Image (cartoon, rainbow, N blue to C red; front, side, top):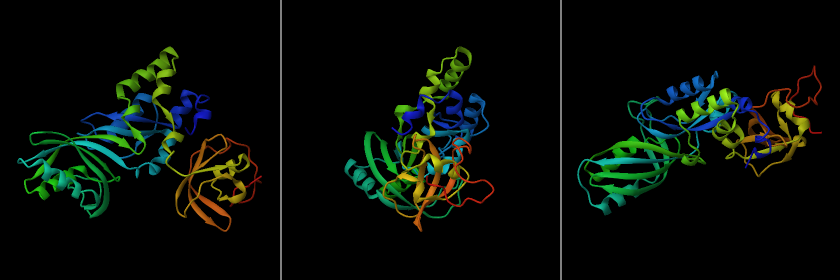
Length: 308
């Protein structure tokens, strides 16, 4: 797994500065309030979530800490999975429910509901699957895999309309964000305890088990490995040129990519260019300048990262 070669060398302070947690959001607070609580627990200035959950919803909520918040944009478009309780307003045959549910897989057009934080214009989103897990009377437990930004409440309403009986979403839990599922979930209480074990008892193990290095949150991105001699130039915003690359996958232009050191440390996020010897433009610098030695001449504007 990316980042394993350096994980054991990172101090708790470094993990808090450039790490993330997979929080089990409780019902009640907003996602923003949960991120604020994480800041207070860890005594940090910045924490950001990737993918808003409604106050009443629970489940997987990735929280990026301190410097890692610069990578929020790389996570917000990850696909999501939910389980929800669909309450039917009248009884309907099982076969009809299954058939109509299947009709809502594929590309859908949705208008955000009135109580949303985005502009209410029609948006196109893809639903990958809808599985009927259980049914008890007019309450149906659905498992839904979908593109980021899909409104499950609206999806439930539309299924009810298509059935001709009406329906609404009664409960919602997010079970997966990209590669992150419920297996690594932690609660706010667990995070509080882990922090105090570290501060008061010098026991790092619980905190290390909860806070993961940022590299693991970015494993879904194409990975470009660069030479040590190119790292500091990239940290200063230089364009990544071919001589600075050790290895890279097959890429298309305008892809979001991760730029890494030979030790698999995230250096920057970039956008692939693949033209005129330029591999990528830097979008977000993730590593502090000066972490690696400077191999480029000072006093001159550096446009491309050096190779050797």
